[in-house]
Image 1 (spheres, one colour):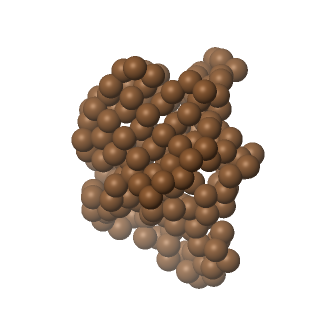
Image 2: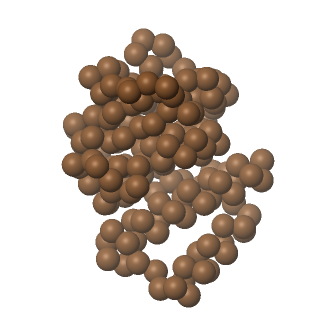
Image 3: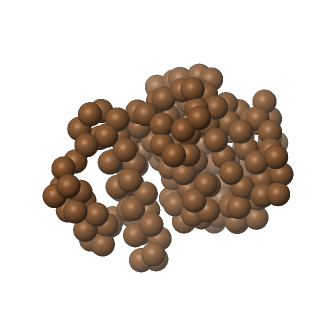
Length: 171
């Protein structure tokens, strides 16, 4: 459990620092030491993920769109980092994933699905297809382990800083 909390906190801190940098408010070196030291502090399990990240991160450096909802960004980054705990933490406890036609609901089912079918693959945001107040639809390039992959639409609905629904469909 401690490892999960530390990984989640580290991803959240990284997203926050990236957001600050994109806004021209990058922390000073002394502030950065404090931020990094803070990753070992106790972490509440219900801490929300920041709402929006502006500017590409390493996982989307080739994306033409620059504003990706932070919860979706955490999901993308977790896939590429092969971080199952961070991927699960990007979802609300009772979240639903619709993977083409299958419904996957709740952290336990999401963890099992991601461990079997997602972790080990790569995910790149190509563009933002649609923006909404409660989330956005992304055009992504998804490549399961051992494949060249394909384009898909990942429609993320976000509430309280976490993904409450992810609708994953072939493009």
